[in-house]
Length: 364
Ligand code: ADP
Image (cartoon, rainbow, N blue to C red; front, side):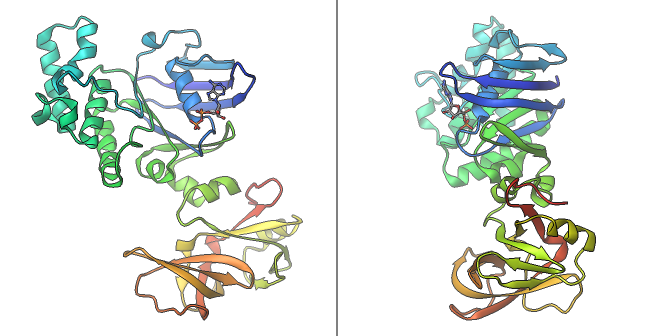
């Protein structure tokens, strides 16, 4: 399986729109990489340049150390799964799977073996004689995956392959695609706008915004060590809490209302670096908070006035305010609280991050 390398790759569309800027990315052999970001950030453009469906305006794309900028899609050893499954409605599942191989002139015995092998991996053996319309959305998507897999391509590209499925099917297919990847080991590049899909499936995630890569890392790296405000806010649900302010000495002063949050014993060197920035944003995740007051060292005790809550069954999100600053705290569903009353919670120091307001970069 090959390595894929984007070196300063740019895409400028004919109307002059610069959709992808100086993209540098190496995708390793056997890796499952997910491009994620809001709509319009350049994910599909990047994937389509890799597939050869879109020309490259600048920079080099290498597959196995060979520049492939000018190579036709069919000569790149790539199979692609799109958002819409586009199965042939009049053909059976078997014929849908066999179609590409027949076109390529593969003999029927080999085709039968490959269909058998792939339909077993995908759990669609019983549906082979059926027509697509007699299958559920999830089953149809499996057949679409099967059509890509059966070609034994070196690289699989998937563009929002789960977006037409309902919530339960999506969850099932997430682990299904991961399982198939573990069996085939094929280098996979997958595009989604859904951060949960990215977090649950990827070996590494590439977060994009406005045509620029924001950060590349494992799900854990992105979650615990976001390099900027955008990544910190994009990964995680509910979103990370952000409070604007500045630091003097060992005190954080909120911009909105002047509320003082004392941080005695916080990493002194880091805090003095933070203090050099005119305005900063303090960030902590709703789920990194604990309930009540803590007497332990290295803990920030906070009190919010409760406004609303969201009961999710396994967890409870409590929304409220510290002074005029909005916060959310994720806790266990049996937590007792009252609307318009104070609720104590705490955040360990090592879960508090600071970002510069202007550059939006993390302060380390
Ligand atoms: P994503 O997949 O992240 O939603 P796309 O890669 O599809 O984003 O698009 C990136 C940007 O490029 C968007 O602003 C989109 O409007 C623009 N774009 C996409 N295709 C074209 C095109 N053929 N001509 C001009 N602009 C385009």
